[in-house]
Image 1: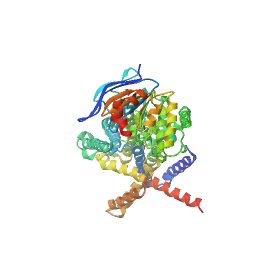
Image 2 (image 1 turned 180 degrees about the vertical axis):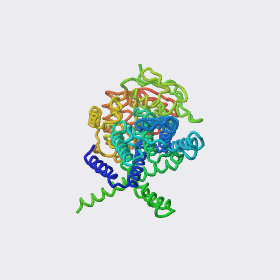
Image 3 (image 1 turned 90 degrees about the horizontal axis):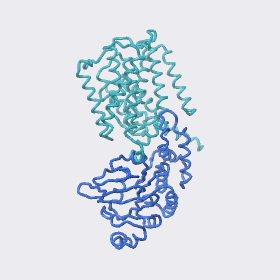
Image 4 (image 1 turned 30 degrees about the horizontal axis):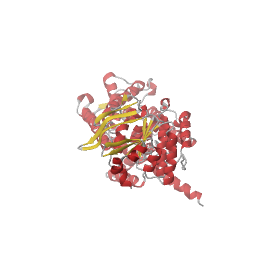
Length: 318
Length: 247
């Protein structure tokens, strides 16, 4: 990693690590939620920002892992995160593999519609069947822990640090992935698919791998979400949820990794603050989203880069 | 044995016969030019060879293998490389990255997911080697989209050099180039032909008659004539159908 990235990451991690020290359970829980969405948004950014796969069904994998976790607990009494985390993430990856095989044959707007359709199918499957708890969802009754009861996920601080670790590892993993030969291939596909094929790359394989990795990471977020909410309900499979995470990616700046994290913080804060302020909060959120997308082509990360460049320019001409 | 052979290759778009019954052979080491008036089906023919378009009838063989149903990427990996008529570089990536993505295909062991792509020195060496053979003025870190048209065309050929295909198919490589750029490119192509078999689809007659060992003339999707430049120049039907228009 370059020095500036290393320093910035270090500072952010240090700040993140100090949050529980304020002793404010609300703040800790709130930060946990933001970090979960940061993971979720980063996972979608791998698809959208790096491979050009605009998916409107990404909540499916978040939801599948959340339901897998809840079912593991409700049906067979699994309460060890060391078991539920890999299993639920794997389930999300497998569902991503199946949906990817069926949807990646299409491109552009058709891909958007196909991912949306599959996610909605899962929504109705869960919403309308007793096995998945219907519209009430499945309440988490067991207390999840990391092997020993002293590391219980119902302790907000333990849960928070678990989420920090997951978010940090996701960021580092994706940071290396997008700079690797594999990641470069994805960027080539996004830039010019036809040219990549003519160079000898079998596009379908790389897209599928990306879709599965993105799905698995969304599953990781979904698993952490259930630990936080103690509930898996159909709303997390709804397309609105997919749209929300897509909005985080676009607001923050796609194709940057830092962007989705900023986007997650921004959108969650924006919704929370605006909702406290007025019942017409959607209007405020809408205006902010429109302004940022209109004036900041690369989202907030892009806006920041533009401002920094201009400041740098101004400084070099005294 | 010919390197590439088409047998009665045809392509229909609905009722339009864009390519009809084309049989031709490309011998190893030769520069084979395909010429013809606008709408003769040259680019369609090239797209059939590279696999961009499925054939309607007929078959094609590469090194004795029937590749009629092979995907474009499989053909590329077998040694058929192509450039596009409208420059197809990765516009939002740097010059270096354009060439690196091409060079990377030659090192299957380098398809890692963890270590930075720049760390693969054999790929980097190949990129440096290719850049040395081109005459680009722009820096390697320039975004390809910011290059001049002529330089983009060169970069595309550089990408072909990086994958070093047995057969290089170039779709109007000199289109939109200045006279000087064209001369430069002729030099590059001549050097390339020492190690690669070349197939050119070309409008510029000077380029064709300077470079080609064999010329195939397509008119309305069919082969009108095929032979050495001298034979084509002397061919009366070619003069009437095509060359006559130029005079």
